[in-house]
Length: 103
Image (cartoon, rainbow, N blue to C red):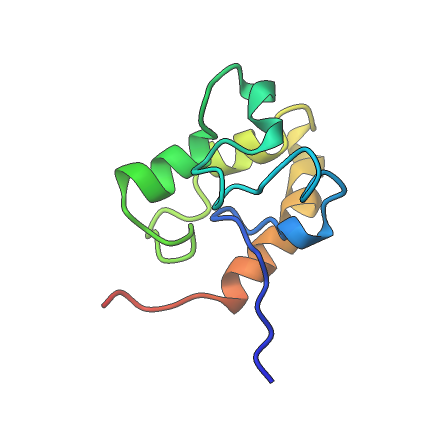
């Protein structure tokens, strides 16, 4: 059985989001412009821009700088630094589970 997860490049599982399918098509389907992008006052998620557009990666996991400062601060910008790691942990696990070597 092949289990496919609709995962954004940052490790977010879009299938588990209440906005997905109603007010949001997800990061991959919207080419980096999911519903929450308005929180960044930009048209494209900064992580998607860095990962997919600039570095042409399928997700953040193969990046040698992962997890970088951009990743840590964009995902949970309002959290104090000591709380940020626990908020990021599930996404890092998802990306670690999908880690793949460079081709």
